[in-house]
Amino acid sequence: MKAVQLYYPPEWAHCYGCGYLNAQGLRIETHWHPERGESETRFTPKPYHTAIPGFVYGGLLASLVDCHSTATAAAAKAQAEGLSLEAHPLRFVTASLKVDYLKPTPLGPELLLVGRAREVKGKKVVVETELFAEGVLTVRGEAVLVQIGEGFGRSGSAPGGG
Ligand SMILES: CCCCCCCCCCCCCCCC(=O)SCCNC(=O)CCNC(=O)[C@H](O)C(C)(C)COP(=O)(O)OP(=O)(O)OC[C@H]1O[C@@H](n2cnc3c(N)ncnc32)[C@H](O)[C@@H]1OP(=O)(O)O
Image 1 (tube, helix red, strand yellow):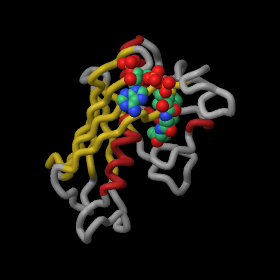
Image 2 (spheres, helix red, strand yellow):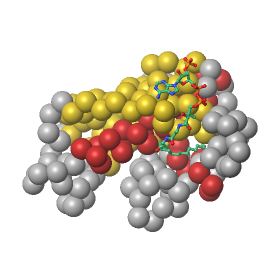
Image 3 (cartoon, helix red, strand yellow):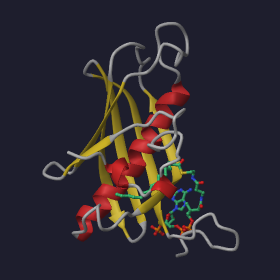
């Protein structure tokens, strides 16, 4: 199954968290499971992603939730509208990100993020994410993602404008 991020056109593939063209980035890959309506991302932090010895830095965990949520929003919206990711590269940015650190996350094991869209409405998608280390839920995230148009970020263009 092809990762959601690999459908991103090159101009959207520079993100530090999820851009396949960012050699220094995390380059996470998120897989969408349409039958469950859930996304999954697996990532193993490096030894230097340390908060205190033995535990993962919270900023990295927030980054994982952030980019995992962006991909989940694109896949969930595509499914809701009956669109293929290949033909319709929907673009979402993060408007709001909330992260609850429930327990320290051990550094070493592979982490699993599982996401669901709680709401798909207009250009907004609300995504809930749970992050597990060795089967233990350590982080819970909630993000509001907003769909944007081709001209996003270019001078003179309004947010969301095409
Ligand atoms: C599948 C193939 C894909 C291929 C292609 C994909 C490309 C994928 C590229 C990946 C890229 C990675 C990215 C990583 C994640 C970042 O790191 S993104 C970078 C950080 N984020 C930003 O820089 C965004 C900055 N903010 C903005 O530009 C604008 O505020 C926004 C987010 C576009 C929203 O502006 P707007 O379009 O005017 O939105 P607006 O109409 O006011 O609100 C729309 C809805 O969102 C809600 N909303 C807006 N802001 C908020 C907020 N802060 N809190 C709560 N709700 C909010 C509104 O209430 C509204 O809800 P409803 O009334 O419809 O229920």
